[in-house]
Image 1 (cartoon, helix red, strand yellow):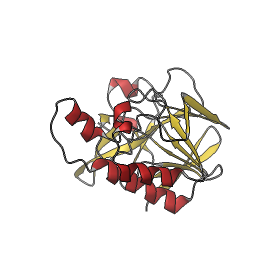
Image 2 (cartoon, helix red, strand yellow):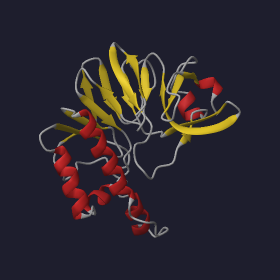
Image 3 (cartoon, one colour):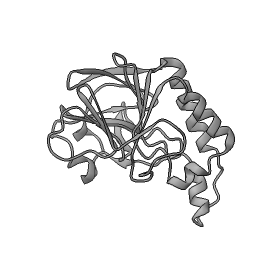
Length: 223
């Protein structure tokens, strides 16, 4: 698997090809915007009937990251569930799988706009987590917030490489903050050129694609 290190407020972090973030020194794995139960939530609210497999696929992807890295701490950076009822509606097999992954490690559920209340799955539910030089929260705060790690926007970037147009989920960062891509299997994305993202980061911000090549690309080169 391709991965690439970066530094944020003195912490050396690895941007994983999956969209996960690994902090080796702290043995901390961070994932954002799982949106578990999204197909169930859409159907429950009268929307399209979609194949209900995205939860299992997302949990499987998370399980592979945990197996590969053996984290002591897992931080789920908000919008882990598509709404609070989606947590209650988890299939028993998926609930058991999640609880097995949680066993024996510190597990932090960060509050998101889709899942603002405590979840009945164990672990610790926080509005944000301050860990050493880093602050983990769901939505980036404007202003100078050195060491901020957030999600929410599901950033994606489009650019032309070797004459071919590529669109990929991506990490967005500047000297102060890092915005993670969505980890969930059934999630859309917001262009990094959107005012919502551009208004949060410095003019010299860069992106890291979750597809190769994983190196810093000036945000200005991306649509």
